[in-house]
Length: 588
Image (tube, rainbow, N blue to C red; front, top):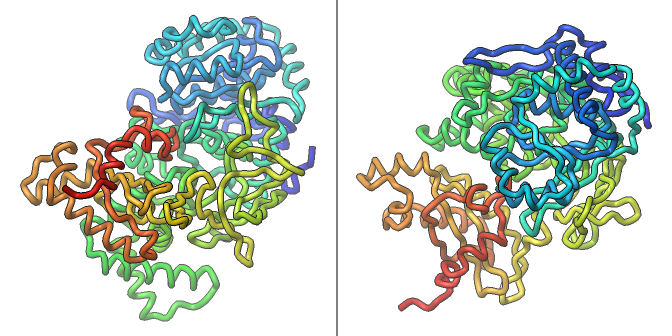
């Protein structure tokens, strides 16, 4: 394996030995921070390694063999990381399952991966497995986090030398994890990612300083997703304390204010919510002016230029009245936040950068061990997803598809996975299925997804993502999805933001329940006004001509969103086929 070109990190060869080496290097420094009984507690690297060792020896004592799969069905919490590293140290392969998955979805992942054991978080998750147990002949046993005490006790009695042998036997070519892509079409596919894949990608990220040693990292993203997994590995390798969320979505902002992270990985929805929270009750023109002022001054400072006194005075005023309040929402110590998994409006990125809380974008997929391009405060271009990591290559095919090559490309799909829609590797180049462009400086922009392109009845190719994202910038709109393949013109389904639309309802003495508001003429008129403004920025053939408002927001529970909050277009198109059809019917 290629040696690290920097002195950062533990120098581990695989993920199996990373915790032990981190304990040797960082000792009593905090490795994890988590909330128990209302108080934040720390776990040192030494405690982390000792706990992982006991759990790993317990698994070996239960009979876990090298290369066998163990499924993990749990929310993001410190116990997830403990058992994850334990399975890996014992030579096993971790198969994460989203905690929001249904029993049938859990059965698919466990069965397709041929997992021998399943670790569940609680009785709710255990019930999912019990409901499908008869369909899983290769599943031997189910354990709960509550069983960790007994498992650790069992491990303490097992010879530590055998664990050391297991760790030493793991090679970079061995499978580390099988992550099932949530997918917007068809059943999930299990991406086999090796120890070498993730050690390479962590080194690539460390080379450009995505996270620095000692920085507190706040994590609420599901560890079943490759994005959160990479952040976990980077934090442990670099000695950056990992602060786990308290488990309540409504407490994310209070968590941030309490732990004061330097780095925040997230999906766009969180930043969109905070942006709406800050800007909804302010004059849009003042927000726009403050944003441009903040951008100008911060760009000058970054370039080492002297800021004129009058410009500095205006900036200081904006900082005291607006910018500092935004920074404080993130805890006041944020160096960088990274938004991934879905696009985010450039205007939102500009706003946060102006405030001194930079939110930057990266790009990758599970098949590339999470990431291929990224942005840092020192090297970024807002509105792009950054440049390729050291050691990664990106090029654009003739049809606009993004192709990727590098040591972080996955080994292939496990079980019944296929490469019909994307995922084929030809001459070392991964076909991503995404469409994009590279500028003269090597910054990548994502323009859409090959399978999402809408071809109208007139033969016009439309990429819906940009218009949809512009609609979602409205405080009133939660989700927007364009429809129109082989149709005369594009239409859309809109969902209301449950929190924001309540303000409008109260101001206009309307009922506040979403089903009623979806049919309310004043709300329809409101959304039409938003659509008219957005449409004005697009050619006539691209404009959405009609829409309907759904009586609920799209969600994972209804099967309409993936765990990373991407819309499952095929599900929405099929589920609301009658509503879409009605938009094309002649008026009575």
